[in-house]
Amino acid sequence: MNTAIRIKLFVMMVLEFFIWGAWLPLIYGYLPSLGYSFWQQSLILSAFPFAAILGMFFSNQFVDRNFAAERFLAASHLIGGLAIFALAYTQSFPLFFFLMLVHCLLYVPTVAICNTIAFANVKDPQKEFGTIRVGGSIGWILAAWPFTFILVDWDKVAAANPQGIVDWIGTVLSSGLTGEALQKGSRATFIVAGISSLILSAFSLTLPHTPPKKAASTENKLAWLEAVKLLKHPFILVLWIITFLDAFILYCYFNWAGTFLGTPEVGIKGNWIMPVMSIGQVSEILTMLILGYVLKRLGWRTTMVIGILGHTARFAVFAFLPQMTGLIILVNILHGVCYAFFFATVYIFAEEYFPKDVRASAQGLFNFMILGMGSLVANSACPWLRAQFTHNDVTDYRGLFLVPCAISVVAALILALFFRPPAKNTTPAQASA
Image (cartoon, rainbow, N blue to C red; front, side, top):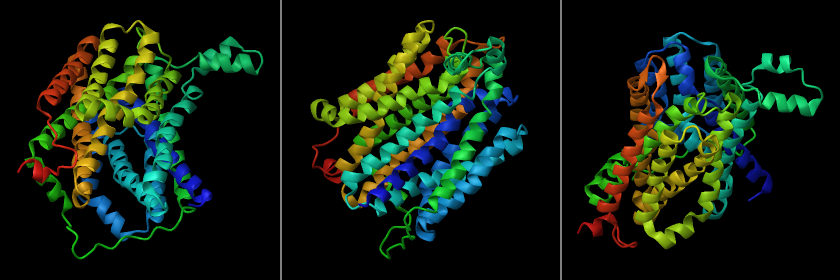
């Protein structure tokens, strides 16, 4: 593959996930600052998983067959970018919800479209796609770092009167916003996301032309029905249910971690919260490098149980050791273990265990839980759960974190006891024969 094309595809992935990574981590703390009730927060946070579910059943297939991929990418990021940019200047709940829904409905299909463009322009997907897709993880990491210079208490910096560039940088990095000021300042995340979306819109026009795919006459237009039929196999049903629980736990982390890290007890400054959380994505890249070795040595079930128990350990540290700031920062390394050892393993398992004609359906089945239902239920329940553990404007994070901690233990036990995949070269149909 032409090196210039490979670089363009890599940059496309960086920008694609930079957008998502810019606004997601801090929105959970920003919405309460606008005075929204927990059901209003839940509705806004549900826009993304709703778009993901819609995409699995309709929009991804519709876009793939009716639009040139790079042109749809340009148009969607232009409109979606303007929508999310406008969120920084919106306080009205109906308008905020509408703009978020517009952004999500246009953004979610582009995740699959980026994959389509990449696969259409590489010669050896198994060899080349991984190095392109890692740009997405790098983009999420990079999205955190502008905020070390954005979410800053500039009055404090001015009062310190730093002398020289080194002293000035040191003062800025140690003068992050906290409390209510951080909540209000988080609107900058939408500005950064919007600008990066507009940049990707323009950049998309330089990508290789990828025409729409016409459906084959024999192709099942309701492929998701084939995926649902797979649930008749007990080992798939068990894994599907555990995937939902693990996705719910993952989004509990995103819902609560940002505000927790900024509490006085933990003491992380507002401009460092997103970089601290991005440690998980750094760890994700490194963990993916050893995943193949771990799977070979430990097998599917043990590897996935370890991934689930990574959540248990992280939430336990958050719950019982909040004053150990160094450990709170370090334990974010477990995010990579949680993601690679469970979610990435689920995707690989689907590729290994299902014949080619149902692999796409199998992946969609699990994506429905990971990006759709798990996120939807968590984003609906987490604001309510936090309200139950908040009294006199003080949140009992220990009690709150013990909820996903307990769920993760139960999920790990169910997986360990009831997940019994057949021999590697056995299809689901043969396994239940």
